Length: 398
Ligand SMILES: NC(=O)c1ccc[n+]([C@@H]2O[C@H](COP(=O)([O-])OP(=O)(O)OC[C@H]3O[C@@H](n4cnc5c(N)ncnc54)[C@H](OP(=O)(O)O)[C@@H]3O)[C@@H](O)[C@H]2O)c1
Image (tube, rainbow, N blue to C red):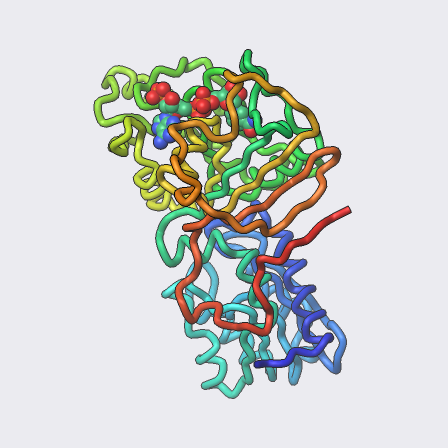
């Protein structure tokens, strides 16, 4: 078991804090922060702010200047790359700068970029892996899952009353959650590559599907807006199809969707993708994710009605993380939709289990972050670092 000092942890925490600044800016690249330390003091920092822009290590090295980097330590939350992509290899810069020791949290899962630590060792730079590995993995799970599976990481987000209803019996659902909870949802939207909804939600709520977190209106990229509309029955007048509201729109339809509707939507700039049925009369979510992965979508936020939630969580089990906001109200009604529709399971032993990762308050609401059974986990060996403990800690915020 590796023992990390408090100082080492503090420096890597700072690298992780810097990495978070790239939320919503860096995809398809990872979130990375770097800190250069000399004689126990931080001399410079850097973070990656988007594709084609300097990597965190390069930014930190440039900010320090050569006099400060000789014999210094570098803390970075991802193994430095040794490949030439849109920018050059970070390992060359680190060696040229005279860095003596590199701490990194997790290996680079990208087959083209990995091997940086070995290249550094070969050049005489000491490397130490695994510092705050769990936190670093949690931060970059979109990137890691896509690198290993070529499918996006799936977050499902829903808001319900205390009695589990997502709308009233008349279909009124705006708003169940508080402003603070909705702002958090916009923060999630700002950080993902795509948002996915079902046809009924699009028709009833006419959402923009844009990301509007407080104070960040123009900083992030707008996520791709996706809808499951098997027969392409949604009217073209919906905000979802209007480019002035948000990112590009993708409509997933059935193999036999009317060709005239396909042509009309395509002419309006909507990408139409045909998806096979799942055997239960719905579009296959597995195939939807495959198609999104091919478009280099690394993360998708599903904002489901009861029908889509049941498909995603129970029938196909595609969710990797679930955010549930519970609002302090009771709605009742046999016919008011609950969080999950569909047929449901018959026996308790058939339930999909879940692990609660976090419970917090969002204004008057309670926010659960849950990892359902069947969620993505990285392959053995990638995170076999027991010293940082499991991320499934239960945290209660005041
Ligand atoms: N409180 C919340 O967090 C929240 C969030 C979102 C929505 N809502 C509310 O939920 C209600 C709508 O929910 P809903 O259950 O009626 O519908 P939904 O989940 O929004 O959409 C379901 C429809 O999507 C299409 N679809 C295609 N493939 C699918 C698949 N694999 N799985 C599921 N659906 C697929 C089907 O359209 P076809 O019928 O054409 O086959 C299906 O009927 C609205 O009242 C909305 O306001 C609440």
